[in-house]
Length: 246
Image (cartoon, rainbow, N blue to C red; front, side, top):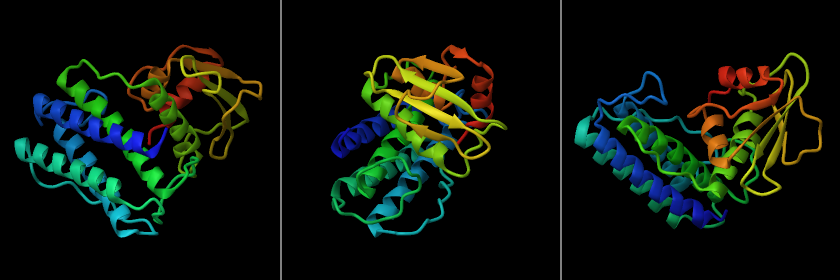
């Protein structure tokens, strides 16, 4: 996907998130984020938007602390979230293509601007799903290509970092396959006592395979939906459920 496509998705998903949160009310529980209410979701996502916008706008080349959300609630909090989202979209839309700034995971991406536009598009989509769950549904579908990209970012980005807890005491191989996203939508995740190493292929023999539509894999691997049925060693499914939280 191109950066412009990610920006369009980010714009749309943030608007949907705000609309769902407004209908649900800030007291509503978020079933996909146990312990959270909609106010927590808005404060977190809005703070992330402002944090990302600041890194891009100021060209920070080192990590910045994530700010806390404001002591607002109800309609005022929804308005604050909408403003946070608008600032982020406008900042990314106006940033130079050769932007130099800090990024935080190694998933392949052509530039820092592409990184932040992609990352915030996925951040917002996952939390839009949370807001719609709090509203009681229905959930807006996630496009196949975008969902497959999100699986790629999660496996080759977040879980390539040292902080990933998806580890095994002996080498294991998990295959992830999106059945509706083309022949190359397959990932081989090599598990060990070190952070997972994921390649975009099906070369190694796998101990287990997780297969489903790209959307189902996207939501399941982000722990927003049950995992599809796994063939092979089902213990790897339990390992993911218990240890993959970001």
